[in-house]
View 1 (cartoon, helix red, strand yellow):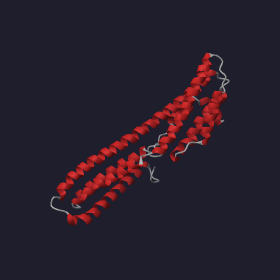
View 2: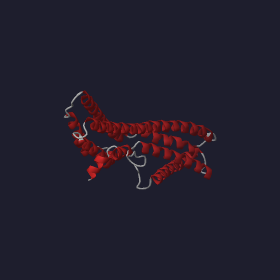
View 3: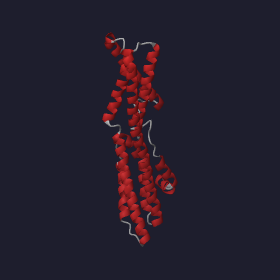
View 4: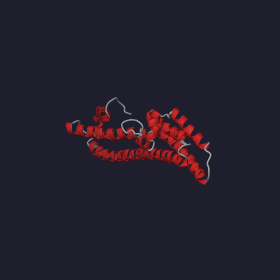
Length: 263
């Protein structure tokens, strides 16, 4: 995604138009082969078949879309949890000791910056950034080497280590969602269902109104399939999830450190 190097709306229209061409090709092919065998009651049978198959196909598309959209929302929630854990660690370091933890806070900021600038684009290729892992491990090691003075710092250090572990699990979740996509068997059912839903139209004569109805049906189904594929690829256009929560964290909570890194 996108399938063609065009704006997302045009990409969707072209995808749906391709579905129309496939549907019309199937209609004329089936009509050429089967019209000679049509009986007087063929249209009477085809009408209910179109209705039933169309309803079942709509339920299948709704199920697949609901599943993919649920995963899409889960990615947003996972990203928010990751950013929240990072903010907790960063602010915890300030509470722990502003002066002695400056180096760790800069490492946290480098991690966030790498996720925004480098890793987010790599997720569309189902990869995580090695540099982000390097900065992650740097923070992890430095947190483990903190020497707490008193119960407050001891509890705060334990909480920061736990939060930083949350960051690691969130990263794995992000790349897992990027790799997952639509299960092959569900995509196969969506494609097969498209042909079953369109097939019974062959019993109707190729008049302008009938061709329009077939095209309208196919165009709408094509848009739905495109939408499913778009949502199933959350780190690619057109439904790309942006690292807005990380950018907000970088420019708000880490503004001073971000300026130092740029300098």
